[in-house]
Amino acid sequence: MWPSGTALHRRVWGWFEDRLGLNSVRQFIAHKRVPVHSGTIWYYFGGITLFLFLLQVATGILLLLYYRPTAGEAYESVQFIVTRAHYGWLVRSIHSWSANLMIFTAFVHMFSVVFLRGFRRPREVTWLSGIGLLALALGFGFSGYLLPWNTVSYFATKVGTDLASDLPLVGPALARFLRGGDEVGGATLTRFFGFHVAVLPAATTLLLILHLALVQKWGISSPPWVEERDRGSGRRAADLAFFPNFFLREMIAWYAALGVLGCLAALFPWELGEKADPFAPAPPGIRPEWYFLAPFHTLKLIPSRLWILEGEQLGLIGFGVLALGWTLLPFWAADREGLERRRLVTGAGVLLAGYLITFSLLGYWR
Amino acid sequence: MTSQAAEGRRRLVGWLLGSGITTSVASFLYPLFRFMDPPAVPEATVNEVSAGKVGDLKPNSGRIVKFGSRPVLLVRVSETEWRAFSALCTHLDCTVQYQEQRRQIWCACHNGFYDLNGRVVSGPPPRPLESYEARVRGEEVVIARRG
Image 1 (tube, one colour):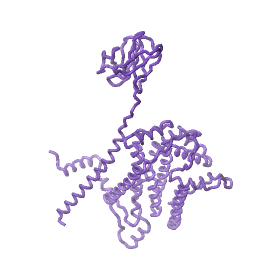
Image 2 (spheres, helix red, strand yellow):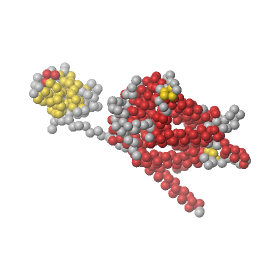
Image 3 (cartoon, each protein chain N blue to C red):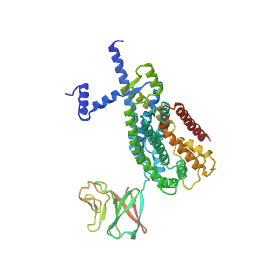
Image 4 (cartoon, each protein chain N blue to C red):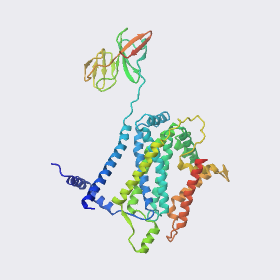
């Protein structure tokens, strides 16, 4: 006779417990707590970004079933996906929309970490790995943009790789490496496909493991003002069990994200555009994805020559300095005595967010 | 509220939640599996192809000709007699070839033999080869679907 439901559950659990030691994992999870304060809602964005990344992986694997990475077939294979494959338009649309939403939530996550001071000692490496993940996500966006081999993506890649060639010293070699030759062509497409489905996913997986392991090791940080308030009042800091309380809330957030994504993908399917023609002139209105719009618009505003530098070089050096300064944020956010420079950090965060939003909007409308 | 009523409400909420999640998971999986199923690609219907000039093939020899997207084996049996068969072995779809010494059609994959009427002579093929019409039109050899 079959054992009753509970007995069967116990036996199945016992079988796995004997072989995998699941109880230690369960106890480990049971001890994990999440701080509760007015900013707790921002903690969900890291998880949502992870969820959107997982969706990217799943839909990316599905697209690989039909996609062909050659200049002669790429556009036609995507056309086949969106017009002939069952639900192909939905799979591609979810892949494209979730990529864009993932970069958006990654930015929200980054700024929330800044404003809630989640980068402070001992979480500097968590911050650095997060910045690395954001850079990889932008790399995914840049490489994936070319894959449908349409006019907009072709010219955006030409502009992007041409910009890389303006970097001092390494520029020309880097541009040649990215293009797989002197021009954007079939070799570039094959290369970008390789980056998109092999190199970047491998690097992201490694960095993601490090990032999550560090989040696990150091726990979720409380903002300093919450810590001070709790210390001052002498009460135990308010928190929430990670499992099941926070976990279930996170699942609801994932479900909501899926709902938003499903609506966007179904109501605004990602367009394919015209097939790229390397011998056709660039059509008007060529612009990169929205997350590259701010630097794109900035470069438009810089004069062609300033002092001994060309405008593009100056822009690239400026972006480089800005990115480096931002990456090193945990190291200048406190003085040598360990006193936090709160106003400086908040000001830098507001300025950067303001710059990105304003210039992205200007780049979009002009 | 009695504990019995609370238990009943909890069971109802659990049931609603469980069936809701099951339905949504099914709604995600359905398009996923449908996507993995390759759509049928209609091929342009080919009823007749040119297999080249009469002089291209000497008597007692054969060659594979493209018939739409499928291979067809054209055999010149004698000076005036031509035969054509589907080149796909009825055993496991390997492409067959003409063997001049035996004057038979041979599948190298599992050593199946067919005669010049497409009938199985030996080996594992379960059915005869599908036969096509081969005729000479002027200087040209033409292969056509039967019927």
